[in-house]
Image (cartoon, rainbow, N blue to C red; front, side, top):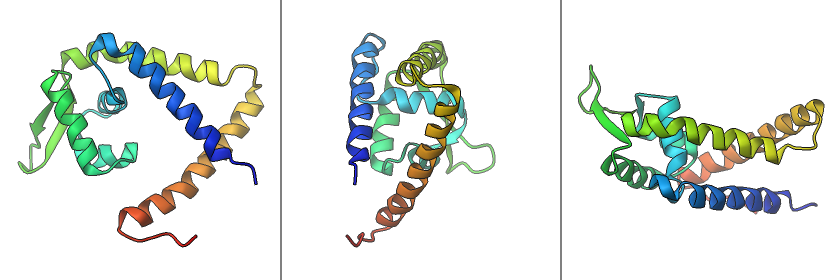
Length: 150
């Protein structure tokens, strides 16, 4: 069997390294841009949903959110109906860098898919979605404290 996940990991780490270098001047490090982009795209999201969306544990998400808050990129606001719920919203600083982060993502996507036809991109996307769905089943299982049988 081909070790496709190794290639996916190399791609992910390469793009992460590029972003960490390019976003250093923005004061964004260690994947913080992932959180900021999702918050800008989903203003008012709660931290638990953000962690689920990015596929990290709640502690990791809490650290990243706290740093973004301290740096002035985002703010937490009480939910209007339930004060226990904190909504995450971009502040002006976050909204100002979002277009740059979005352009970088689009550029990286364009580079990654260069040389592929539209049909190949559609097929690749569909297959990648299937892989993602398969992995998400295991992620949910392990996240709940279970051990995989391999």
